[in-house]
Image (cartoon, rainbow, N blue to C red):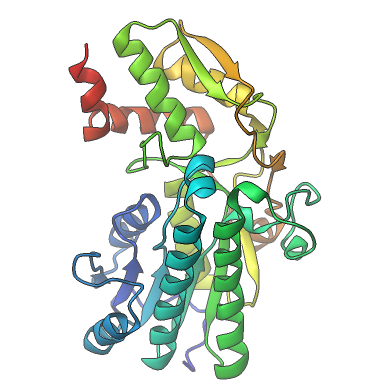
Length: 325
């Protein structure tokens, strides 16, 4: 662990991407391989349950990664967070604990932990700077997930303090892109909108109902931009505490719905179910620290939605709707 962590990491050394099948993990694997990494390590949940310390320890002992990106976890939107808080808290705390401990014990030179912008207080000052962490109550609809993610950040910092580990934490904003989760019972807002508008188009329906008032503002980052930011941080960043990764601008959910509508089903009318919760009123990250380091997002939102929809249409997610046509 004596390697200077702010120098570019070794592209020939083994790097473990935990959670490689998810939205973020799959983008990380694509990015690392495109950048010339020759030993990208992955493991499926059918082989190793990342909540099981003994299993994770055995895997680390055998494979000995030099670097780790911790992108694994149980994730979901407002509905999933509200109805499955125990799973979100337990699964994520255990995954963070087993991987971080094993990384320390086997001498991993650098670990990048990926959190979430939901760690910040519900009424945080906007745009949200990193020092807003733990300054107020969390958003109730995702409190369990946020607590688990905060624990992950503090765990990385504790291992840095006690053992000198080069463990860093990045907090991405709302993500979207290829390989997203489009399950309406557990997805986030953007993929849910893509699927709803697609299914309405296939079924010949003239309207789509979205949750809430449409007034909350959200920021969206294409997952390929995040993957690029992760590699940037592995090469150039080594400080405690979270660092925000975002697009630097947000928009109301109503405008997002209109943008998705324009890409997927331009003639649809948008209706609002105001009996459903809005969630956090606004969640825009202050990305000035990343910008000062020399990194900015590059994929415009409409272009990213078009790419995501093209991927969705060619995936198994679109098959059920297509079958009803």
